[in-house]
Image 1 (spheres, rainbow, N blue to C red):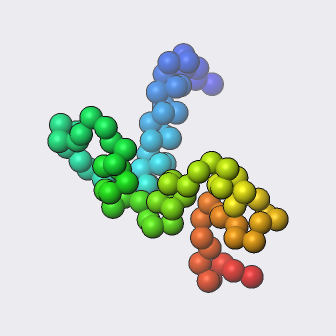
Image 2 (cartoon, rainbow, N blue to C red):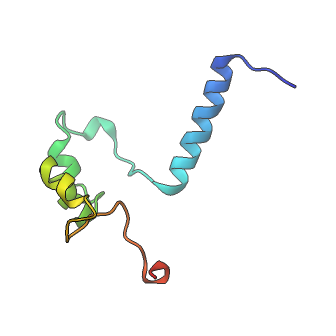
Image 3 (cartoon, rainbow, N blue to C red):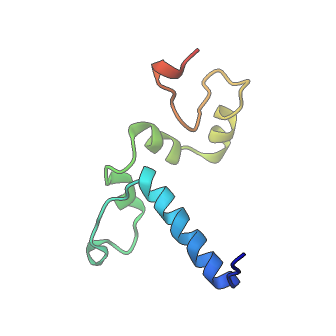
Length: 87
């Protein structure tokens, strides 16, 4: 059985994690030198987020908590399920 020191094992795990994330979430390729110092407004207007995601991002924390509660009528979920997966 081969043994790795923790730094090597950590590097392997980070590469594996980065590859897994990149397979599902492609980040836009912006030139960092062209970005403003305050990215708050830029991120909201970038087109990266869906309308539903923007609604959640711009909502107060107490409302997010209330709408995440299954007893609330308008429940927010982490993902929308397609019609194919609904029961």
